[in-house]
Length: 136
Image (cartoon, rainbow, N blue to C red; front, side, top):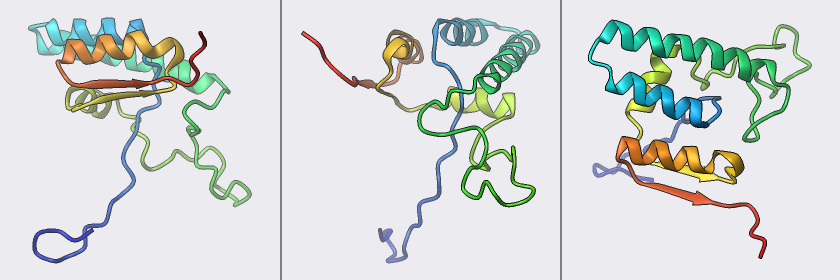
């Protein structure tokens, strides 16, 4: 697309978090954002992030169609286990990303539906849920 001065805007790949949206995430975000002490706030978040990162990386199931490592050239020497460059792995970057969300969209969220809605309501941002299958 062209911007207002006639130059082309090129879209870059968005950054993403490999994270389970669950009650634990919502509880942690609420605790952190309600805390008045910055140091305590960051300790709570850092501990949550450390545990969650271990949990996600130890799970061999691929969530959301992406894996935590770059599979674009798996047979290339030295590429095994290399983190995707657009994946956020730093706890502070993850915290800042969650704090700056403008919108939460749950595509086929299954068990994460309620937590995604709760997080959006707590953050006072718009949300949408697109279910996979609807059974009568």
